[in-house]
Image (spheres, rainbow, N blue to C red):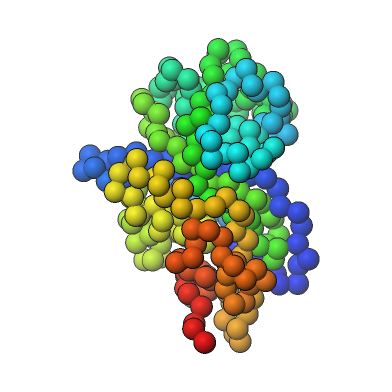
Length: 293
């Protein structure tokens, strides 16, 4: 699942986006949409993740201004990369989950699936993903509703990992008349679940979660309603959280900023009371706080 090597010098992380799509189930509980990556994927193969992927150069093209809405105020913390992160987030969510918010909500589940298939065909024929996505929306006379994306937090892959990404985690409430569906190619399953139920499946060994995913689910388990996500986001800075691979004897640890084993002495705002490290136990990285003293 993870390809960690302490001897790696580390490559520059690529910008990426991931989207936590939320809805309320019949009992009023908050659910999120997850996909299972194909086991042959080069990064996190077989893991359960939120839809997402790397930013394409065309995602930040200024021509997008005519095909997207503005950005949430919180996105200003992402500086000049904000628009590219947001467009990539919704392109990947269309590709992997057949979910895409558009201005006016004139897109239902079958329409989203049709657009996904058309985008996939264009990319398979050699078109660049970002440009093909924009041209498709121009053809359909749709405006991407990037204003609905709420940035939550940002994680950077450890230098010890072979492939590295600087990933913005977004929240998106499920658009009306859309349902979420795996592409059965890059991902092999797509399903809804409450954050707590997904954590329980992970704890029981039914699914594999990388540390940023398990930590995100722990935070989202606090939500009593969809609207509570804004307060949750407001407690968290968008500074990148970059774990560092360290060892204590025979124990493998991914230390977080603020842990005594991490090079950064202070935690990223919002993580002061959370785990300071992830400890490898029975093939899972479990969140723990550093021992006192």
